[in-house]
Length: 231
Image 1 (cartoon, one colour):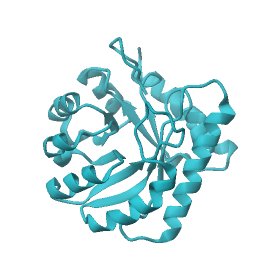
Image 2: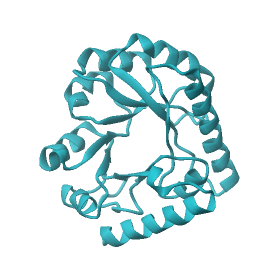
Image 3: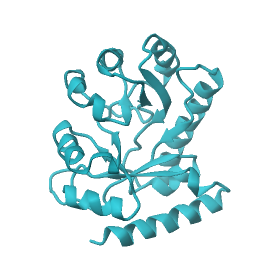
C-alpha cells in the first residue's frame, strides 16, 4: 500500500467534494487513524503531508508518540478511561471523546494546560457507541465551565455502517445543527467551531454536511492487523 498515493487521492476527493458544496478544502483537517498500523506506516503518512495522527489506545499511542514526537499533532479519538488520563493527557493535543463528567474532572485535575476537546455525541442512539445523548449536550457543555482546563472546540460523532446514505447524512446534519446551537451560546469555554465526523466509508457525506475533521484509517494508511475495525 502506498500511503502517499492514497493521500493524494483523498486530497483530490476532498477538493472536489468541497467545490460541490462551495466549501474551502483548507478548512478540512485530515486525521490519519494509525491505531491498527505500525509506527513506520504512521511516519509514511507524515511524509505524505498528513501530520495529524489519531490513536485510541494508551499503549499504541504512547509508543508512537515516543518514536515520532512533535512531528505530529496527536488526536486521541477513542474512549478514554478516567484512570488512564494521568498517563496520556500531557501527550495529547486534541481529545475527540469527552463524554462524561468524571472524565472532565480527571482531565481538569491532571492537565497542566488547557486541552482542546470535542464532546462526543451519540446521535445514532446505538448502544455499541460511546457519547452523550443529544438532549443532554447543552447542560453538559454548560457544566464544563467549572473545569478551566477544558476547551470545547467542537462536537464529534460516529455514524453507523449502513448503506442508506440519507440515514448517514441525517446523523451528520443533526450534529451540525447541535454544534450551531452550542456555538451560538457564545460560551467562552466552548467556542465549538468544529465538527469531527466522517470516516473512510462516509467522509464525503460528512464533508458535504460540514465536517471540519475527518478520521481516515483504511483508505489512507490501511489496516495491518485483523480482528478490528479501522476508521
